[in-house]
Amino acid sequence: MKVFISGLPRCGKTTLIKELIKNYDGSISGFITEEIRNKTRKGFKIKDVKTGEEGILASVDLKEGPKVGKYFVNIEDIEKIGITSLKRDASLYFIDEIGAMELKSRKFEKVLETLLSSNKNIIATLHRNYVNKYKKYGEVFWLTRENWNEIFEKIRSRIK
Image (cartoon, rainbow, N blue to C red; front, side, top):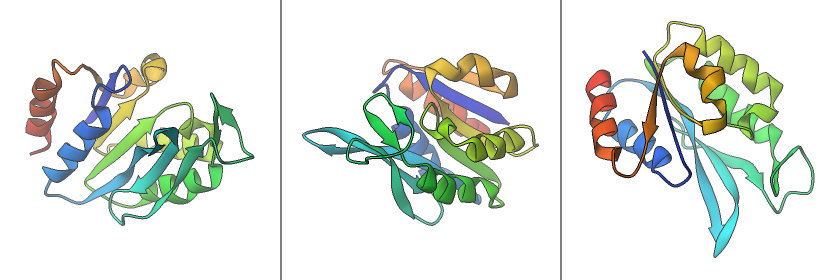
């Protein structure tokens, strides 16, 4: 089973992933990304869903690395946390998200492609600009605030 959740910004993709993690009893791995805010968005952190280890995915305060918009991407933490979480054995992988920042790491992209080509179970949020590239691997759900509960229940019933 491979499920992708896409949608416009702030539609609840990360919240959906967090709720699915809470509702799953098996072994998990993967990562979530969350905003770093101080009145305004300063960047994003990356957090291993199994170990809780956190790092910086991207930030306006970093001074080097590839840029996505106003953010400098931290390749080191993507590879340390993201790749490590995808190489660990689990019954279900949660990936939040597959987008421009994460894909700045070629190593990450290769590990992701290997995982997606495997028979492993994956639930991932997918930046809307990458739907066409990754939809061949699984089913894509378009999330909105209006259909959030419906999509949550559909995916939750699949992972029970």
